[in-house]
Length: 257
Image 1: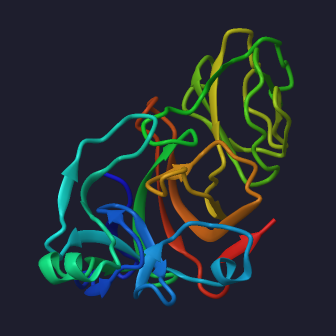
Image 2: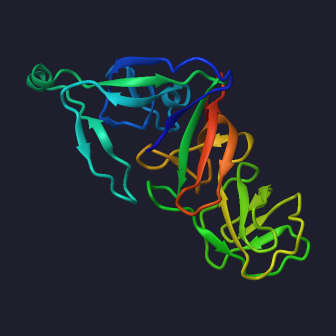
């Protein structure tokens, strides 16, 4: 499952569900935004052109309504797939199956809680585990044996999976492809062989970019363009099962780097 409704901050009431014509093919679990001239909704991708940077992430596709619905098996490293709708502008197709239409659970800025998996660029690709190569007595530096993607400074978290600091998170201060530095030190020495994982998500205000198929949070990116969100939970405990719970922030939701 990709993006899913996780309740609201009031703790009462039911999700608000509406039906919309789509402006492109999509699957259950993908986030949606305004579709412009092609349909009421489209995929909530992020790009640098003005229309998309000012367009709101306002819901999650939670059902397929039209007759084109079909189930496509998930492909790890590609997309989650599942039940989807095939967008068409061909009159004969529309006469046969109806226009592409989906059920959308609305995401109310600052109120609705959304849960989403965190992957490395593509669906099903777990975040890279860093096996530290250099001791840090001060508890502030983690060195990766190989280059990883450069996560944006001050927009990510690092978590210790193995070692004296196991179970502890820290916000990232600076990061290059091989070196991660934190301002608030881990309480114990970071030893050679300690295992860490980092993601471009952090508790509180942060940014959210999406995987290539727009079906999960991309936890390994430089955050050039992203949605402004508030992270209520970031869980990096288990490889391949990392996730976050967030609410979209009100106002101009997407930011261009």
